[in-house]
Length: 159
Image (tube, rainbow, N blue to C red; front, side, top):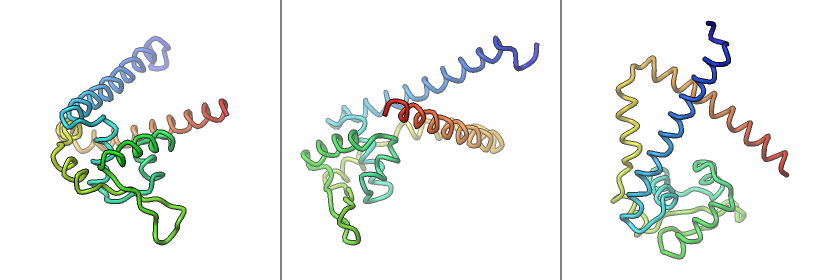
């Protein structure tokens, strides 16, 4: 049989989707467990870890990094601000832009929460050859772009 055989292609697609769902699920499970230990939600931990790594971000930049809509980010940030984990600050260069910064409490929690899911994935990726990592990077980039286009297409149909 040739590689274009629908049965072979569907089997390949099923295995790829299963692997992606498994990786996503494990990442969420580990993050959710760590978040619960600190009285936070998974997305709140994600926000704190992103801010820990890059410092202040605009809400739109945070939304891009988390692949979330602005309404979702606003809800997460509202609760975090209420709980004293982050502060909103207007940009001194552009009053329309609001930057988000972790408070000292938020920074302390971020420092105390390990990024277990990332460490687990990094260890698994290090086991791959450099050629395999390069190929995986290339393929995942193509896949991410294709998903972005599909989501934008679907969003445009519903608008």
